[in-house]
Length: 507
Ligand SMILES: Cc1cc2nc3c(=O)[nH]c(=O)nc-3n(C[C@H](O)[C@H](O)[C@H](O)COP(=O)(O)OP(=O)(O)OC[C@H]3O[C@@H](n4cnc5c(N)ncnc54)[C@H](O)[C@@H]3O)c2cc1C
Image 1 (cartoon, helix red, strand yellow):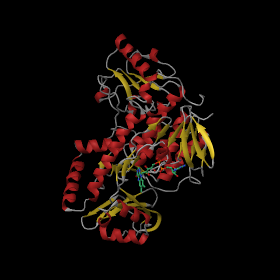
Image 2: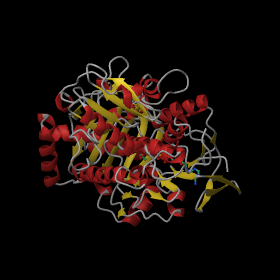
Image 3: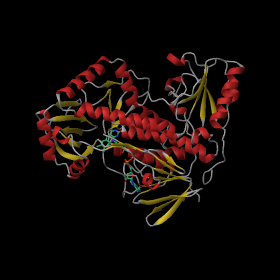
Image 4: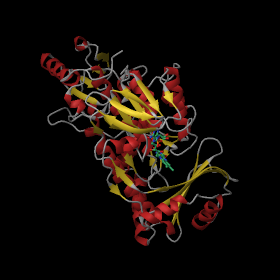
């Protein structure tokens, strides 16, 4: 066995996981059922935190993946929440990317695939995995009638994940009760800005400009809500036609906007489920861990952020420097990311209620939320933090610094910023002291960098240990021998193994 990790599924999450593992020196291959790269535009919304994590990744051609993607998309200052007019204002967010990037999913996938090509990571197309069996020291997958073996398998194979099912991981949640229409089309009169219509008698529709002359149209007719799961299945099996789309838009908005030349016509439901476990021995699941209504453009974003959380920890485990806390303890992939999936489902179900309750009470609820968002107060701030991904923190162990678990801001490092300094194979120790007091704490696992004072909760920080994914592991507000000893202890706790290496080999 020469391979560390097999990734099943060459969608965005599989490709991102492969690139990050390769960057961490892990031997990895991707197996994708489709004959070639996808051309579907499904997820068109890329949020700020996703652009941040894509910026951590070198594309292999001298650029960062985030930069390559931003060059191709359309920047929008507001993110929609429940298709309410106005939207959440991202302009004041503390990030190099204070906007939503509109770009079709195939383009995100292509950018990641280019990165893998430049890195010479194998992506096998036309390769369907039909079985996954693990033993104490490896996993075997059946693909194209043959078998492949690796130390670990990641299931990035979507909602109906073969890997998740083979590992016997339950997928509980709520059944679907509505069917939405989704299409990418041209309009005879293109819009400059997104338009949202909500009509208690007819339904909801949104028309959103994408790059080029293409527009994403999505919505739901009132008659397509309140269905049984069987009715949803039957409705989803009927292909959406351009005529049906025109009629629905006419009914809801009073105009069909001259939709023509459909590039993509599809349906989506509000089925909401997440994996009960994210790991079973040597098998891990990626975005295959959650399905939900595509509201607020979150699935791909959370999936890519899952990949970032998982990759450096699995690499550490394979290379033999992962302490138990990263493998199955409080900072393990499942411990940190399953609660994000719980939040994701709660958020999309709440948006579902706001968008699809076609009654006077539904209308009142929308008006109330619209007011909260327009005021730009605490509710709007919390929603922006969540949707943008910038406000997603990891649990803070009792007695640790208030910043533990929070995302470190890019601007704490002068020059290129923090994001470009992060690497999946080592921590950063940010030294805010004027005299380089912590330079002796550097090692192969910890790079010490001089940082610059920041505002807010960061104003008093003298040193911060930052994980490969940009979250704070530990921080101190004082200098001197006690603070140095405290940091040294934290470094040991995060980077000294409690068990031997488990990969197929190390490079
Ligand atoms: C209409 C719609 C709109 C959406 N809009 C947004 C949005 O704006 N923003 C957002 O963040 N998210 C959005 N999403 C969700 C987003 O598309 C998904 O979250 C994203 O595709 C998940 O990526 P993935 O790589 O995990 O899975 P997928 O993209 O589903 O990729 C899984 C891959 O695995 C392959 N595969 C499956 N089984 C096997 C097997 N046995 N062997 C080998 N390969 C296999 C499949 O062919 C596929 O290529 C939307 C989804 C839909 C349907």
